[in-house]
Length: 121
Image (tube, rainbow, N blue to C red; front, side):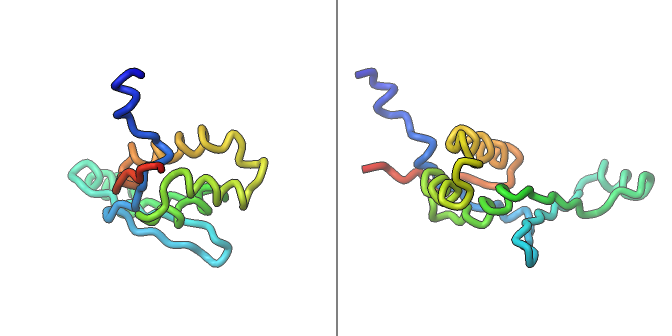
């Protein structure tokens, strides 16, 4: 077997947690809003000249609002996927490609950070 394959990690084993940089809330209907503070010189100028907000709001859609609270620093991507499948059924398919893409996007934007990799037995 190729040695690089033995040492590679399975993405489904990754465990993520929310970044401390962003505050978030869940409303009575279960919809999640992430609050993004617009900092820096460019943002201050845009706030004054263009009346841009000091805090932007990112409203997650239904599936994103379901997934977001599950990103708790304990569950791995596989476990989150199982809960998504249980809740949304066929609507979530293709489940793991979609979930992996969503998690990677959240990671790239800095909303979540990788905490650990749980080794599969």
